[in-house]
Amino acid sequence: MDATSIIHACPSSVYLVRTAAIRCTVSAPQQKSKETRLEEFGTWLKGMGHEPCNLRLRSFPSESETPGTGAIAKTGGIRKGQIIVQVPFQAFMSEQTARACPHVGPLIEKARLTEWQSLCLHLLCERAKGVRSMWYPYLALLPTESEMAELHPLMWPQGLSEEWLSGSPMLLKLQQRFLNCREDYEALVAAGGNFLFPPEKSIDAIVTEISTRWAASILLSRAFSLDLTNELDDDEFSEHSTVLVPWADMLNHSSLCGKESCLVYDSIKKLACLHASKDYLEGEQVFDSYGPNLSPSDLLLDYGFVDQENNNHRVDLPGSFFLRL
Image (cartoon, rainbow, N blue to C red; front, side, top):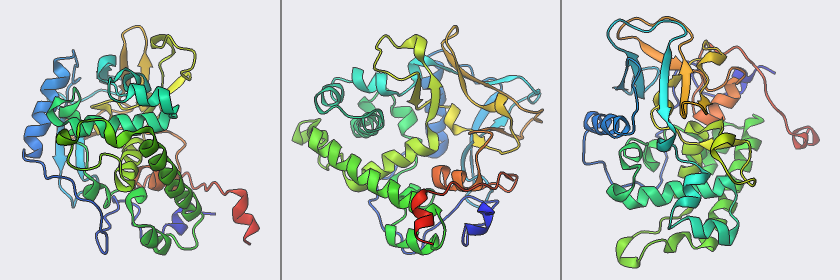
């Protein structure tokens, strides 16, 4: 089956923007401009030893093919094979940093939260800290709940997702993700996720069904699977860890990029790195690869978009799909 044929009313060359009939929790508006937040983010990373590798982050308008944040080549452009991302280990958000958090760590141990649940709670906790969070300059650039409702299927209201994906096997996978988020929400509440701070420090509940889905959509669309074995001294951590890597997740995906444009961890330099898959002219947007074997369906469900260069028309069908035929 051609995966493109089952993406109903979803143009294949643009990010999905679904505004009609969407209602969800709206986070407090950002007081600073996007440009100011990008500058503060760059200063924060530079303080950790980050080298931007001749790239500059910029904001693209909503009518462009890649709205939001992306990276462009600076003076002289970029050569094929050149390192374009080098993010220091200390900037990562991972299960390891979640366990090290004095607020979240004890809950993870006591409630035996999974890696995914730990990261969701870690993300929600750091966002709730605001400027007190070490990652505040990074978190200030992440889309809010209302913005993610226009960008990611996991933030669509379930009734509308059933309408938009009616007849598609993608609907079964998305419905299962809704159920998983419900289970994660219940686990985080039971663990005490809404009692991380004194009542006077947190007016609103940190963990809600919507905020849990937001955290999951952020991890699905922005996190990387990296081999951090050499950085972990605990056998209970898996070889490949789910990690948020600031800056690296600001680059947009192109299905034309090869494996060299997939992020990997250099345990010697303690950096997350990737290389350019082609030459880029000065001012041209520079892309990476979220995975060389992703299908249009994978891109839609995990990242909320489909690019027209993707010809890997594959659909993974669960056994229950055939029982319904």
